[in-house]
Length: 277
Image (cartoon, rainbow, N blue to C red):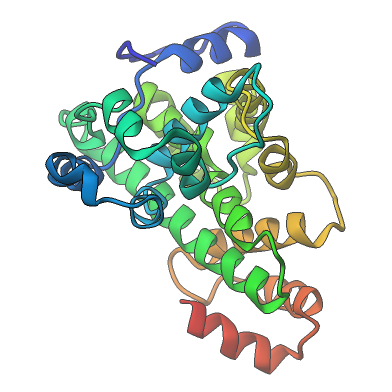
């Protein structure tokens, strides 16, 4: 993950998209990069839990860390690192700071593309809200994998984030198509502009980077009744539908399905969702 990528035309195949994105540099939020540099001189005082919490506020830094940890684990008899904290425990703090030098930032990468930076910010804010909802659902259900479900929701739309970083003009084309036609489904707009669906790219990248199987399964958008998958799906759906407020016509269906997942009535579910927000 080292070279700067800026695509202006779609690539011919899914494999070509995977090859391009898998080797491209992934920038992170400026506040993440700054916080890491503040901790670097005092790494002996840093523990995996607090550093993991810092990383877990940034979807792309989380992605970089989990991909790196998976690469380290390959060929060794080690458990999957499915959360930032688990990855840091696996690696150790000193090796983390050695392997992750000063980080390139999203703000630098898109400095000349304010509209794309705004589009990316919206996706990342949505991911952060989805991860909070998913964690809340998991805790309510007393799921022992609550932190993994949080990571899965945070990473659910990472391919869309990478598209804004590596191909901002194409990402804007998709956004404009959907602005012009509110009924146009995301996957249709993606196929029209990119020739692929971002979900397929995401799953292929997860395989290429050997990300944990549980994370890949939970983020797969199949019609699963598995409560872990449902927790992430419904959290992502609700975050998307409430991005501009709670008056979207799809929200009542979301609340109904969440109530079913949590085994609650509609009113208690709405009250709980407001607390998560």
